[in-house]
View 1 (tube, one colour):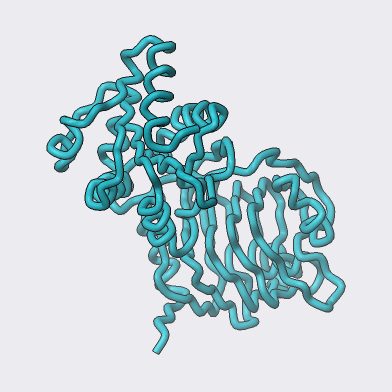
View 2 (cartoon, rainbow, N blue to C red):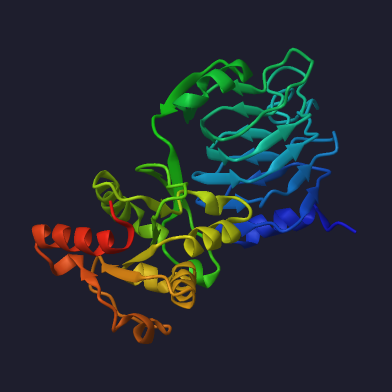
Length: 334
C-alpha cells in the first residue's frame, strides 16, 4: 500500500523544521496550508500533493521559499465569502518570495483566473509545467513580478495573465548556502550561473567533485579548464531531482581523471567524501586541487595526503596554469 500522509502531517513538518523539508511520501489534503516561514526549502522528491478538488494547497507569505520536485494536482481556489484570494489560485497564492523548481501542475481550477497560481508578489519559475484546462482561465494570474528563463518565454507566456515578466538570462544551478550535506541537512539556496553543460560523450573526460557552497569559485576554475579544451563532467544541478546518485556514480566510473576541489566545506560534505572514496576504489587517477588551506579529516588524510596535489591558493598564477595543464593532459589529452 502506498504511503500517503495528510494535511496535519505536512503542516507539522513545515512548522517544526528549519531550513529544509524533504518528503518521502504523497500528501492528501483537505485544507490549505500556510507557509509563513522565511528561508524554507520543501523538496517533494517527485511526490504528489493532491487537494482532491476541495481546496487550494499553499498560501505563501514567507520570504525565500522554494518548492521543488512536486506534482500538484486537483487544487481548487477558494470561493467562500471570507476566503483569502477567493476565486483565484487553485494551488498557490503567493504574497511572499517564492521559487518553483521542477514542479508539475495537473487539473487545478479557479473560478475567476489563475487555475494554478495567483501571484501578488515575487515568483521565480524554473522548469515547471502547468494545468491545461478547458475552462478558458489562465494558469497563472500575475499581479506582481515573475522571473523565468528566457528560453521558456514561448512555453510559459500563454499561461500567464498580467503583471511583469523578467528573465533569468542563463541556466542556473541551485546550491547550498552552507556546505553541510554530510549532516543530512540542506539550507536556503542561491542561484549561481552554470558555466557550461557537463560533458556527455565517449571521449576521455574529467570528473570534478566540489561542495556546492564553493560553486562560485569552483565554476570559475571549471570555466577556465573548459576554455582550455578539457572535457569536464560536473554536477550541474541534477541533485535537485531523483536518481542523482546513480547518475553521479556512472559519470565517475566512466571518467579518466577525478579532480576534487578541496576546502573546509568540501571536507565536511559527505557527497564529496563518498565521491573521493569511490574514485579510489575504482582506481581512477585523482588530483586534489586545494582552493584554500584545508585540514583533512574523516579518513581523507590517509587517502589524499600522499597524492600529488595542486595547491592553487599558494601558487603563482602562471605556475598554477602550467601545472594543471600538464597534469590533466597526461590523462585526458586536450
